[in-house]
Length: 414
Image 1 (cartoon, rainbow, N blue to C red):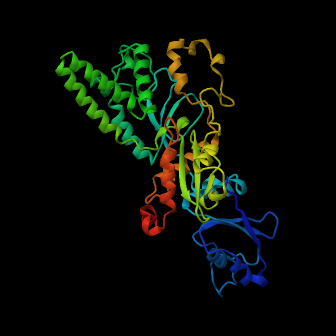
Image 2: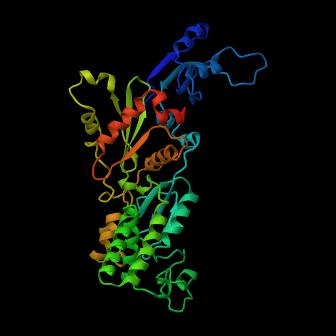
Image 3: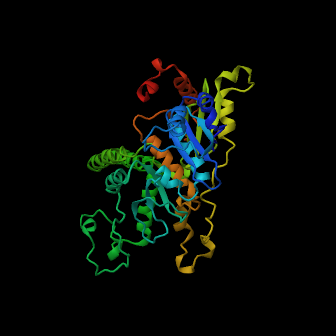
Protein backbone atom coordinates (compact mmCIF):
# COMPACT_ATOMS: atom_id res chain seq x y z
CA UNK A 1 0.00 0.00 0.00
CA UNK A 2 2.74 2.44 1.03
CA UNK A 3 6.13 1.16 -0.07
CA UNK A 4 9.55 2.10 1.26
CA UNK A 5 10.42 4.18 -1.78
CA UNK A 6 14.00 5.24 -0.98
CA UNK A 7 17.18 3.26 -0.43
CA UNK A 8 20.96 3.52 -0.02
CA UNK A 9 23.80 1.01 -0.04
CA UNK A 10 25.77 1.03 3.20
CA UNK A 11 29.57 1.14 3.00
CA UNK A 12 31.24 1.53 6.41
CA UNK A 13 34.29 3.26 4.93
CA UNK A 14 32.03 6.03 3.54
CA UNK A 15 29.62 6.22 6.45
CA UNK A 16 29.74 10.02 6.79
CA UNK A 17 28.52 10.48 3.20
CA UNK A 18 25.90 7.79 3.81
CA UNK A 19 24.51 9.43 6.96
CA UNK A 20 24.49 12.87 5.37
CA UNK A 21 22.33 11.51 2.54
CA UNK A 22 19.66 10.28 4.94
CA UNK A 23 16.82 12.69 5.84
CA UNK A 24 16.49 13.83 9.43
CA UNK A 25 12.71 13.35 9.28
CA UNK A 26 10.13 10.89 10.66
CA UNK A 27 9.56 7.69 8.76
CA UNK A 28 9.97 3.94 8.54
CA UNK A 29 13.43 2.38 8.39
CA UNK A 30 14.42 -1.07 7.09
CA UNK A 31 18.00 -2.36 7.34
CA UNK A 32 18.88 -5.32 5.11
CA UNK A 33 21.79 -7.57 6.00
CA UNK A 34 24.70 -8.72 3.85
CA UNK A 35 24.17 -12.40 4.58
CA UNK A 36 21.31 -14.16 2.81
CA UNK A 37 18.55 -15.19 5.19
CA UNK A 38 19.73 -12.89 7.96
CA UNK A 39 17.09 -11.21 10.12
CA UNK A 40 15.97 -7.79 8.87
CA UNK A 41 15.66 -4.77 11.12
CA UNK A 42 12.43 -2.80 10.75
CA UNK A 43 11.29 0.13 12.84
CA UNK A 44 9.44 3.42 12.84
CA UNK A 45 11.38 6.46 13.94
CA UNK A 46 11.02 10.17 14.55
CA UNK A 47 14.38 10.78 12.81
CA UNK A 48 15.61 8.40 10.11
CA UNK A 49 19.18 9.74 10.10
CA UNK A 50 19.57 9.62 13.87
CA UNK A 51 18.17 6.06 14.01
CA UNK A 52 20.60 4.92 11.30
CA UNK A 53 23.53 6.55 13.06
CA UNK A 54 22.60 4.85 16.32
CA UNK A 55 22.58 1.43 14.63
CA UNK A 56 25.38 1.77 12.06
CA UNK A 57 28.07 4.04 13.51
CA UNK A 58 31.25 2.64 15.05
CA UNK A 59 30.15 1.37 18.48
CA UNK A 60 31.60 2.77 21.64
CA UNK A 61 33.85 0.60 23.72
CA UNK A 62 31.98 -1.77 26.10
CA UNK A 63 28.64 -0.57 24.74
CA UNK A 64 25.80 -3.10 24.90
CA UNK A 65 23.59 -1.19 22.47
CA UNK A 66 22.52 -3.04 19.31
CA UNK A 67 24.92 -2.33 16.46
CA UNK A 68 24.53 -3.58 12.89
CA UNK A 69 27.54 -1.91 11.29
CA UNK A 70 29.37 -5.13 10.43
CA UNK A 71 26.35 -6.98 9.00
CA UNK A 72 24.26 -4.26 7.29
CA UNK A 73 24.25 -4.09 3.49
CA UNK A 74 21.65 -1.47 2.59
CA UNK A 75 18.97 0.75 4.05
CA UNK A 76 15.47 1.32 2.72
CA UNK A 77 13.17 3.96 4.13
CA UNK A 78 10.09 6.10 3.62
CA UNK A 79 9.67 9.65 4.87
CA UNK A 80 6.19 10.09 6.36
CA UNK A 81 4.16 13.18 7.11
CA UNK A 82 1.95 11.73 9.85
CA UNK A 83 1.81 8.91 12.39
CA UNK A 84 -1.06 7.31 10.48
CA UNK A 85 0.98 7.15 7.26
CA UNK A 86 3.89 5.83 9.27
CA UNK A 87 1.73 3.07 10.76
CA UNK A 88 0.42 2.02 7.35
CA UNK A 89 3.90 1.99 5.82
CA UNK A 90 5.18 -0.08 8.74
CA UNK A 91 2.19 -2.44 8.44
CA UNK A 92 2.69 -2.97 4.72
CA UNK A 93 6.40 -3.65 5.02
CA UNK A 94 6.02 -5.92 8.06
CA UNK A 95 3.26 -7.87 6.29
CA UNK A 96 5.62 -8.45 3.34
CA UNK A 97 8.84 -9.16 5.21
CA UNK A 98 7.48 -10.95 8.30
CA UNK A 99 4.29 -12.72 7.15
CA UNK A 100 4.17 -15.02 10.17
CA UNK A 101 4.75 -12.55 12.97
CA UNK A 102 3.87 -9.08 11.68
CA UNK A 103 0.82 -8.91 13.98
CA UNK A 104 3.07 -9.40 17.02
CA UNK A 105 5.59 -6.88 15.73
CA UNK A 106 2.89 -4.23 15.32
CA UNK A 107 0.94 -5.41 18.38
CA UNK A 108 -2.14 -5.66 16.20
CA UNK A 109 -5.08 -6.98 18.16
CA UNK A 110 -8.52 -7.39 16.56
CA UNK A 111 -10.78 -4.55 17.71
CA UNK A 112 -13.78 -5.03 19.96
CA UNK A 113 -17.07 -5.15 18.05
CA UNK A 114 -20.69 -5.92 18.85
CA UNK A 115 -22.08 -9.05 17.22
CA UNK A 116 -25.63 -10.31 16.76
CA UNK A 117 -25.38 -13.97 15.76
CA UNK A 118 -28.17 -14.13 13.21
CA UNK A 119 -27.62 -17.81 12.49
CA UNK A 120 -28.79 -18.66 15.97
CA UNK A 121 -32.49 -19.40 16.21
CA UNK A 122 -32.75 -16.92 19.09
CA UNK A 123 -29.93 -14.39 18.53
CA UNK A 124 -28.29 -12.35 21.25
CA UNK A 125 -26.00 -9.31 21.14
CA UNK A 126 -22.54 -9.59 22.67
CA UNK A 127 -18.97 -8.27 22.44
CA UNK A 128 -16.34 -10.16 20.46
CA UNK A 129 -12.98 -9.65 18.76
CA UNK A 130 -13.53 -12.29 16.08
CA UNK A 131 -15.04 -11.15 12.78
CA UNK A 132 -16.13 -13.98 10.49
CA UNK A 133 -18.25 -14.33 7.37
CA UNK A 134 -20.83 -16.34 9.28
CA UNK A 135 -23.95 -14.33 8.46
CA UNK A 136 -23.76 -12.36 11.71
CA UNK A 137 -24.25 -8.63 12.18
CA UNK A 138 -21.12 -6.74 13.31
CA UNK A 139 -20.84 -3.18 14.62
CA UNK A 140 -17.59 -1.46 15.48
CA UNK A 141 -14.81 -0.78 16.09
CA UNK A 142 -14.87 0.29 19.74
CA UNK A 143 -11.94 1.68 21.70
CA UNK A 144 -11.81 -1.37 23.98
CA UNK A 145 -13.83 -4.35 25.10
CA UNK A 146 -14.76 -2.46 28.24
CA UNK A 147 -16.22 0.46 26.30
CA UNK A 148 -18.13 -1.90 23.98
CA UNK A 149 -19.61 -3.75 26.97
CA UNK A 150 -20.56 -0.45 28.63
CA UNK A 151 -22.45 0.67 25.54
CA UNK A 152 -24.11 -2.74 25.06
CA UNK A 153 -25.31 -2.78 28.66
CA UNK A 154 -27.21 0.48 28.31
CA UNK A 155 -28.34 -0.22 24.75
CA UNK A 156 -29.82 -3.65 25.47
CA UNK A 157 -31.95 -2.18 28.25
CA UNK A 158 -34.02 -0.63 25.44
CA UNK A 159 -34.97 -4.04 24.03
CA UNK A 160 -36.07 -7.46 25.20
CA UNK A 161 -33.74 -9.89 23.50
CA UNK A 162 -31.97 -12.45 25.66
CA UNK A 163 -28.59 -11.93 27.28
CA UNK A 164 -28.05 -15.47 28.56
CA UNK A 165 -25.68 -17.94 26.90
CA UNK A 166 -27.78 -21.07 27.45
CA UNK A 167 -29.22 -23.21 24.68
CA UNK A 168 -32.86 -22.27 24.20
CA UNK A 169 -35.16 -25.31 24.51
CA UNK A 170 -38.50 -23.51 25.04
CA UNK A 171 -39.21 -25.53 28.17
CA UNK A 172 -42.26 -24.19 30.10
CA UNK A 173 -40.78 -25.73 33.27
CA UNK A 174 -37.59 -23.67 32.99
CA UNK A 175 -37.49 -21.03 35.76
CA UNK A 176 -36.01 -18.28 33.57
CA UNK A 177 -33.58 -15.59 34.68
CA UNK A 178 -33.67 -12.25 36.44
CA UNK A 179 -34.18 -10.38 33.15
CA UNK A 180 -37.37 -12.33 32.40
CA UNK A 181 -38.60 -11.68 35.95
CA UNK A 182 -38.06 -7.95 35.45
CA UNK A 183 -39.87 -8.12 32.07
CA UNK A 184 -36.64 -7.12 30.30
CA UNK A 185 -36.56 -10.26 28.15
CA UNK A 186 -39.16 -12.01 26.01
CA UNK A 187 -38.08 -15.24 27.73
CA UNK A 188 -37.90 -17.69 24.83
CA UNK A 189 -36.28 -20.14 27.27
CA UNK A 190 -39.66 -21.04 28.81
CA UNK A 191 -41.74 -20.22 25.70
CA UNK A 192 -42.63 -16.75 26.94
CA UNK A 193 -42.91 -15.59 23.31
CA UNK A 194 -43.31 -17.05 19.86
CA UNK A 195 -40.44 -17.39 17.42
CA UNK A 196 -42.00 -14.66 15.24
CA UNK A 197 -42.23 -12.24 18.17
CA UNK A 198 -38.57 -12.80 19.03
CA UNK A 199 -37.57 -12.28 15.39
CA UNK A 200 -39.39 -8.95 15.32
CA UNK A 201 -37.53 -7.76 18.44
CA UNK A 202 -34.20 -8.93 17.05
CA UNK A 203 -34.80 -7.14 13.76
CA UNK A 204 -35.48 -3.92 15.73
CA UNK A 205 -32.15 -4.32 17.55
CA UNK A 206 -30.21 -4.83 14.32
CA UNK A 207 -32.00 -2.02 12.48
CA UNK A 208 -31.26 0.37 15.35
CA UNK A 209 -27.57 -0.51 15.42
CA UNK A 210 -27.29 -0.34 11.62
CA UNK A 211 -28.79 3.15 11.57
CA UNK A 212 -26.74 4.43 14.56
CA UNK A 213 -29.94 4.68 16.58
CA UNK A 214 -32.12 6.53 14.07
CA UNK A 215 -34.50 3.60 13.54
CA UNK A 216 -35.41 3.48 17.24
CA UNK A 217 -35.62 7.22 17.89
CA UNK A 218 -37.77 7.78 14.79
CA UNK A 219 -40.07 4.95 15.87
CA UNK A 220 -40.47 6.39 19.37
CA UNK A 221 -41.05 9.89 18.00
CA UNK A 222 -43.79 8.62 15.67
CA UNK A 223 -45.49 6.71 18.49
CA UNK A 224 -45.25 9.73 20.78
CA UNK A 225 -46.82 12.02 18.18
CA UNK A 226 -49.57 9.49 17.50
CA UNK A 227 -50.33 9.21 21.22
CA UNK A 228 -50.47 12.99 21.56
CA UNK A 229 -52.84 13.32 18.62
CA UNK A 230 -55.06 10.65 20.17
CA UNK A 231 -55.03 12.65 23.44
CA UNK A 232 -53.41 9.70 25.23
CA UNK A 233 -51.09 11.97 27.17
CA UNK A 234 -50.11 9.35 29.74
CA UNK A 235 -48.76 7.05 27.01
CA UNK A 236 -47.13 10.03 25.26
CA UNK A 237 -45.32 10.94 28.48
CA UNK A 238 -44.11 7.36 28.86
CA UNK A 239 -42.84 7.32 25.29
CA UNK A 240 -41.09 10.64 25.86
CA UNK A 241 -39.22 9.17 28.85
CA UNK A 242 -38.33 6.12 26.80
CA UNK A 243 -37.05 8.41 24.03
CA UNK A 244 -34.87 10.28 26.51
CA UNK A 245 -33.51 6.97 27.82
CA UNK A 246 -32.77 5.82 24.28
CA UNK A 247 -31.02 9.07 23.40
CA UNK A 248 -28.86 8.83 26.52
CA UNK A 249 -27.85 5.24 25.72
CA UNK A 250 -27.09 6.02 22.07
CA UNK A 251 -24.87 8.95 23.00
CA UNK A 252 -22.32 6.36 24.09
CA UNK A 253 -21.99 5.06 20.51
CA UNK A 254 -18.74 6.35 18.98
CA UNK A 255 -19.01 7.98 15.55
CA UNK A 256 -16.70 5.40 13.99
CA UNK A 257 -18.63 2.42 15.40
CA UNK A 258 -20.84 1.41 12.50
CA UNK A 259 -21.98 -1.65 10.64
CA UNK A 260 -18.55 -2.74 9.47
CA UNK A 261 -19.57 -3.82 5.97
CA UNK A 262 -20.96 -0.30 5.45
CA UNK A 263 -18.16 1.59 7.19
CA UNK A 264 -17.15 4.06 4.46
CA UNK A 265 -14.88 6.94 5.42
CA UNK A 266 -11.91 8.96 4.25
CA UNK A 267 -9.01 9.92 6.52
CA UNK A 268 -7.05 13.05 5.66
CA UNK A 269 -3.40 13.41 6.62
CA UNK A 270 -0.71 15.89 5.78
CA UNK A 271 1.92 14.25 3.55
CA UNK A 272 5.69 14.55 3.75
CA UNK A 273 5.67 16.37 0.39
CA UNK A 274 5.12 20.10 0.50
CA UNK A 275 1.52 21.25 -0.06
CA UNK A 276 0.27 17.68 -0.30
CA UNK A 277 -2.57 15.86 1.43
CA UNK A 278 -3.01 12.09 1.53
CA UNK A 279 -6.58 10.81 1.57
CA UNK A 280 -6.91 7.26 2.92
CA UNK A 281 -10.24 5.72 1.83
CA UNK A 282 -11.93 3.20 4.11
CA UNK A 283 -14.43 1.12 2.11
CA UNK A 284 -16.55 -1.47 3.92
CA UNK A 285 -14.03 -1.45 6.77
CA UNK A 286 -11.06 -2.03 4.46
CA UNK A 287 -8.30 0.50 3.79
CA UNK A 288 -8.00 1.14 0.04
CA UNK A 289 -5.16 2.69 -1.96
CA UNK A 290 -4.29 6.21 -0.73
CA UNK A 291 -5.00 9.28 -2.85
CA UNK A 292 -2.28 11.94 -3.08
CA UNK A 293 -3.65 15.45 -3.62
CA UNK A 294 -0.74 17.71 -4.58
CA UNK A 295 -2.01 21.27 -4.32
CA UNK A 296 1.26 22.67 -5.62
CA UNK A 297 0.65 21.02 -9.00
CA UNK A 298 -3.04 21.83 -9.33
CA UNK A 299 -2.39 25.04 -11.24
CA UNK A 300 -1.15 22.96 -14.17
CA UNK A 301 -3.84 20.29 -13.78
CA UNK A 302 -7.05 20.47 -15.82
CA UNK A 303 -8.94 18.75 -12.98
CA UNK A 304 -10.16 20.17 -9.68
CA UNK A 305 -9.45 18.69 -6.26
CA UNK A 306 -13.01 17.39 -6.09
CA UNK A 307 -12.55 15.62 -9.43
CA UNK A 308 -9.34 13.98 -8.18
CA UNK A 309 -11.08 12.80 -5.02
CA UNK A 310 -14.09 11.52 -6.96
CA UNK A 311 -11.84 9.58 -9.30
CA UNK A 312 -10.17 7.96 -6.33
CA UNK A 313 -13.25 7.32 -4.19
CA UNK A 314 -16.17 6.63 -6.50
CA UNK A 315 -14.91 3.96 -8.92
CA UNK A 316 -13.44 1.81 -6.19
CA UNK A 317 -15.63 -1.23 -5.84
CA UNK A 318 -16.89 -2.05 -2.39
CA UNK A 319 -16.79 -5.69 -1.28
CA UNK A 320 -20.29 -7.13 -1.77
CA UNK A 321 -20.75 -8.52 1.72
CA UNK A 322 -24.39 -9.40 1.38
CA UNK A 323 -24.16 -11.32 -1.89
CA UNK A 324 -20.73 -12.93 -1.54
CA UNK A 325 -20.24 -16.20 0.26
CA UNK A 326 -17.06 -16.73 2.21
CA UNK A 327 -14.90 -19.53 0.88
CA UNK A 328 -15.70 -22.67 2.77
CA UNK A 329 -19.07 -21.41 4.02
CA UNK A 330 -22.19 -23.22 2.80
CA UNK A 331 -24.69 -21.21 0.80
CA UNK A 332 -28.31 -20.82 1.86
CA UNK A 333 -29.41 -23.29 -0.80
CA UNK A 334 -27.13 -25.93 0.75
CA UNK A 335 -28.58 -25.52 4.24
CA UNK A 336 -30.49 -28.43 5.76
CA UNK A 337 -34.26 -28.22 5.54
CA UNK A 338 -34.72 -27.74 9.29
CA UNK A 339 -32.48 -24.62 9.14
CA UNK A 340 -34.42 -22.95 6.33
CA UNK A 341 -36.75 -20.14 7.37
CA UNK A 342 -39.67 -18.63 5.52
CA UNK A 343 -38.82 -15.83 3.06
CA UNK A 344 -40.32 -13.17 5.33
CA UNK A 345 -38.33 -14.40 8.33
CA UNK A 346 -34.95 -14.61 6.59
CA UNK A 347 -35.15 -11.40 4.56
CA UNK A 348 -33.82 -9.12 7.30
CA UNK A 349 -31.22 -11.73 8.33
CA UNK A 350 -29.76 -11.89 4.83
CA UNK A 351 -29.93 -8.10 4.58
CA UNK A 352 -27.74 -7.55 7.64
CA UNK A 353 -25.67 -10.75 7.73
CA UNK A 354 -21.92 -10.51 6.98
CA UNK A 355 -20.84 -13.14 4.44
CA UNK A 356 -17.44 -11.80 3.37
CA UNK A 357 -14.71 -11.43 5.99
CA UNK A 358 -11.14 -11.23 4.61
CA UNK A 359 -8.41 -11.61 7.20
CA UNK A 360 -7.10 -8.10 6.59
CA UNK A 361 -10.40 -6.49 7.60
CA UNK A 362 -9.75 -7.05 11.31
CA UNK A 363 -6.23 -5.68 10.88
CA UNK A 364 -7.40 -2.59 9.00
CA UNK A 365 -10.10 -1.96 11.60
CA UNK A 366 -7.47 -2.30 14.34
CA UNK A 367 -5.29 0.32 12.63
CA UNK A 368 -8.31 2.58 12.15
CA UNK A 369 -9.40 2.21 15.78
CA UNK A 370 -5.87 2.84 17.09
CA UNK A 371 -5.74 6.12 15.17
CA UNK A 372 -9.33 7.23 15.78
CA UNK A 373 -9.18 6.76 19.57
CA UNK A 374 -5.66 8.19 19.96
CA UNK A 375 -5.21 11.40 21.95
CA UNK A 376 -4.30 13.76 20.46
CA UNK A 377 -5.49 12.60 17.06
CA UNK A 378 -3.74 13.93 13.97
CA UNK A 379 -5.70 14.54 10.80
CA UNK A 380 -9.44 14.43 10.13
CA UNK A 381 -12.01 11.83 9.15
CA UNK A 382 -15.24 12.12 7.18
CA UNK A 383 -17.88 9.45 6.83
CA UNK A 384 -19.91 8.66 3.76
CA UNK A 385 -23.63 8.85 4.33
CA UNK A 386 -25.66 9.17 1.12
CA UNK A 387 -22.63 10.69 -0.61
CA UNK A 388 -19.12 11.87 0.18
CA UNK A 389 -19.01 15.34 1.82
CA UNK A 390 -16.60 16.81 -0.73
CA UNK A 391 -16.94 20.45 0.36
CA UNK A 392 -16.17 19.60 3.96
CA UNK A 393 -13.22 17.50 2.81
CA UNK A 394 -11.84 20.41 0.81
CA UNK A 395 -12.15 22.78 3.77
CA UNK A 396 -10.34 20.21 5.95
CA UNK A 397 -7.49 20.05 3.42
CA UNK A 398 -7.07 23.81 3.81
CA UNK A 399 -6.94 23.47 7.58
CA UNK A 400 -4.32 20.70 7.44
CA UNK A 401 -2.11 22.68 5.05
CA UNK A 402 -2.32 25.87 7.08
CA UNK A 403 0.85 26.95 8.95
CA UNK A 404 1.18 25.38 12.43
CA UNK A 405 0.54 28.73 14.15
CA UNK A 406 -2.93 28.92 12.61
CA UNK A 407 -3.73 25.19 12.58
CA UNK A 408 -5.34 24.12 15.90
CA UNK A 409 -4.99 20.42 15.10
CA UNK A 410 -1.29 20.85 14.35
CA UNK A 411 -0.78 22.76 17.60
CA UNK A 412 -2.51 20.06 19.62
CA UNK A 413 -0.43 17.28 18.03
CA UNK A 414 2.91 19.08 18.17
